[in-house]
Length: 177
Image (cartoon, rainbow, N blue to C red; front, side):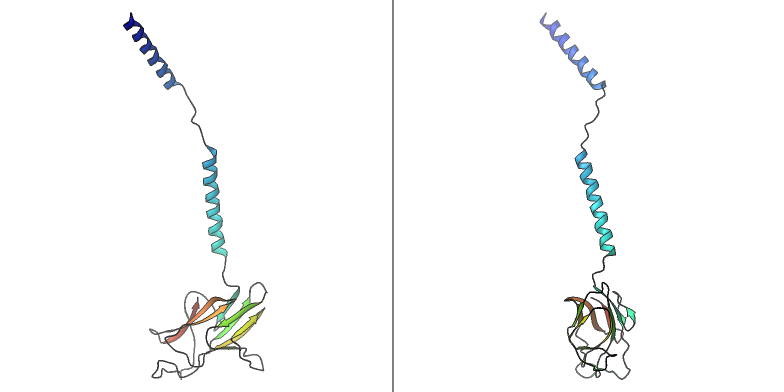
């Protein structure tokens, strides 16, 4: 008798398990992880779009009439410039810069070495720091440039232009810092 009851109980248990297996139960879905994943993707897309459209310089800079970029711009200098025994150039280095504030607000231009002058200004004052609020043309003059030195022009304290001697090509080049 015990065996018959035990066999019937096991049989009914099997029937219940089979019925439960065939019954459709929708899987429980969690909305929060999906929402968080979608929000993270949106944040990444917005950050990438902002990084692509954002220009870090507060002013547009042209060197010798060419817009500044990461590609070095050769500085045209008189042919009389030649290296002396110290590795310095015998004449001054004077690239022409055109600086235009993008927002119209004042931007402070400073140089690591040399002076800034306004070639169109009659007094020919020399500055190491100059404030630009519109568009201005400046001449950056380095009296005795050293080929081993990298000269820097900064806008509001942040490096914007580097001026270095290109040994391979034999000329001075300006590039975005």
